[in-house]
Image (cartoon, rainbow, N blue to C red; front, side, top):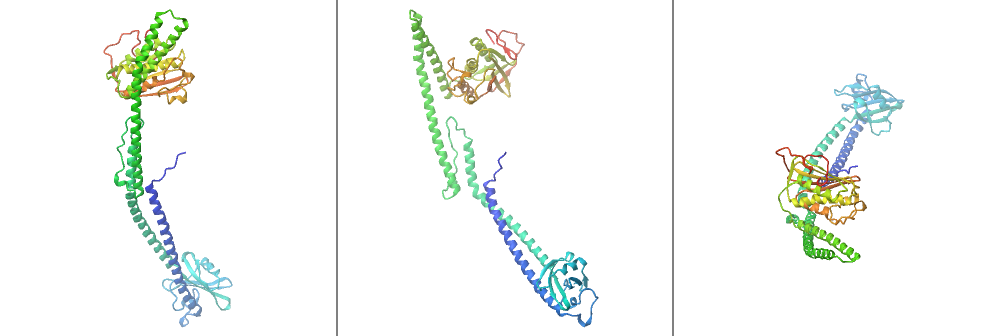
Length: 508
């Protein structure tokens, strides 16, 4: 389920301004319309009262003229205007009903309209009744002699027209006012939030600076004009500048500490090489003289083996320290095809219990770099397979060119790397469980050296593992393919385009 998108601060402030304004305009418009309607209805009621008075006093038309016989005679009383309605109701039945037309003639009401008049209560109070095609009317029913009821009414069409015009004016004025207010609010809010945007831009630029390693310089700062502590945005800008100062100081201290640590490791490794070499030499010299008891000879062999292991560890630490310092790489052009063949041949000699295979292109793949260090990368990867997988495991080394990058894959069908260790295999002194044991004396620096050397060549290294399938992929930039001038002769090294070729004795 996706998280709903949140509105920006600018939009929320604009809505916070416009919504109350719309509510206020609606309330004011509704109140003004209601007051105007009440006033207009009051005016109609006043005219209706006068019409009722004329109706009750006019027993017959002036001069004895009874008119055309349509509707009640009191509609012909002097002063009755256009649209005036008159009706007589006897025993709940309308006997006469008519309305004065635009030319002063009386127009008879339909049966349905007349029925609407029969239910008007004769209490002298004005009521609004909808008469269909005639529209809404204000009606007053007053009792007359002989049990009759006289109904008099005036139309509300003029009131409705006036109200519609007022509402139209209110809506138009309200929309124009909202547009003007919204534009002004957007301008003011935009100008107010512009310093905050500059603070955000500064934070974005700082976020793009790599902080994980190396010397860090955070030159980005919020401009001094945006750090006024009297404003909320200014306080945010000032706080961000202080935070960046603290981060830069901390990064500088961390870098200085890392530099001292690397220097210490390099110096310590360099100084340890001589005594370790001396220990190895003296133990070997004493052993060769012979005449030692069996237990003493065994102890010396153990001392020599541990000295040899310590010598390898010291060399690895010294190499890592020099790689961290940006040294130890000798640029040149490396033939990866030949390099893979040499390394796999060495791995076959060192691990005859494993099956070693190669998958190489027909042409030489050349990359810029240090041949000795790239040889060490491949040697460490294959040594990692030999050390941490059981005998009988098949390891396949593949080489190809993909989009200008040389891709070297070392795949094996061993037990795989545990999931909890997969993200740490390139860390220094990383340790695995029993499926990749340390019984052969691994120092835990092999893959760390691989990553350091590959990174020094501006390449990348990754690993994917599952039970029965582990693949380490090295990508090196600047690869070129040197096509052979002539068809190569077959040889015992297995070079050429051989997919998954088993390694032979004495060569892959």
